[in-house]
Each structure stands twice: as structure tokens, then as C-alpha cells.
Length: 282
Image (tube, rainbow, N blue to C red; front, side, top):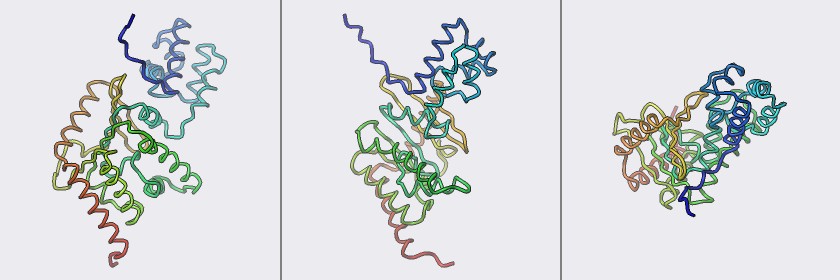
């Protein structure tokens, strides 16, 4: 007998960790509130862990093991889940591979999923003090690995909305910017990327205060992600996600059409290229 039930979305390693935590908690006869008192955290944090939105720190995992008498199980598993990315971004890196559609907004930077290697390296150099070249190599490789999925598959569908500021800020120098912008234009011209630019002439718009990353899934509710300095917020609250979607739609309505956007990006790339050969006088 057919049930017409949609297949369950693939679980990320964090979701599996969270599911196991929930199963062990229930088997121990504890509510989230009771476990939170034993772990010395909020019930909301327990909910985030069980949903796979966040991971506990090593000390939290050790307290979970003591509370549930699991003999170091959650501490050991946590070590295996050590992410290549900052903890606040790791869930996004896992979830974007499951997304059916991704919508990006770049305020002052080209979004990481679309960056070239030299552009990404320049970003990491600017963000890190006393950096080591080998460390930067690792950061760049991890970022390029994320973007590789766009070359290997027609999914997810990707929309990119870029503020003109992200196109003109000379990250890495003129040649790096020219190559970065031509990559974007080529992806859009090939049909792999739906690309729109918010030109300076628009003035104020609905997304001018924050970058935004939204993901839609075939078998789950949409998510929204915003990022600040050394922090990020992955939102699943329907009201907040809907508000982010509305803001994206408002800003998109102000943007240039795709063909005009591609032409503008190629023109700005040419400006960067010319600056390479004709540096300004000091």
C-alpha cells in the first residue's frame, strides 16, 4: 500500500549526533529541561544540539556523558565531527549540499561559495593576524571545496544578488578582482548562476544592513543565515525566515536584470584590468 510519504532528507553528521543525543536522553527518562540542569546550560541549547543546528563544546559533551552515563561516547564522537569550518558556519557548509535552491546576497564581499582561490586567499589574509601560509592554504582549499559542487552538479539552483560595492572593492588587487568578476559573469552567461546586481544608483534597499544566505530544501523547511564578525546565526524560525525572504525579494526587485548585470560586471572587471596596467599616481 502506497503511503505517498516524501523520503526523509539526508541527515548531516551533526543531525545524527543530535538524534543520538535525543534517543539517549529519552531512554534515560529525562526531559530537555532536566538534562539542561545537569549539563548547566539552557533547554534551548539542548534543543539546538538535538536538532543538529549546533554542536556542544568538549566540556559540554563531557557533562552530557556524565549525565547520561554514556562512558565518554559523546566526547569521542565530537572529536570525529571536528569541522573544517568555524563552528558557527559548519552547519551551513553541511546543509548547502542538501539544498535544492540557494540564494546569496553579497554586501561588501563576493559570497564564499562563488570565490576564486586568489580572492579567497586575500580575504583570509585580511581577516587573520600573524597568519601562516600553510594555514591559509587549508582555509582556501576548504572554501574551494564548497564551490566545487557548483561545477559537479546542476543542483542546487543558485541565485546571487550582489551589491555594487562587492564588485568594486579591490580585494587582492586589480588582477584578482578582474578574474573573480569574470568567473561570476561566465557562470551567469552559462546558465549555472542567476545573477543580479544592486547598483549604487538604487540607493537604500532592503538588504543594505547585512549579507544573507538562504537555503530551500525538497524535504524540509527553508533556512536563513546571516553572519557578523566572528559570529553567525542560522535561523529556522518560520517568521524570521519569511522576513528574510521578503527582504531578499524586495532587494531583488530593485536590482538590474541579469543581462544588464552581466554587462556591468564585465565592464567593472575591465576597469580593474586597466588599473593593473595604469596604476594611480601617488
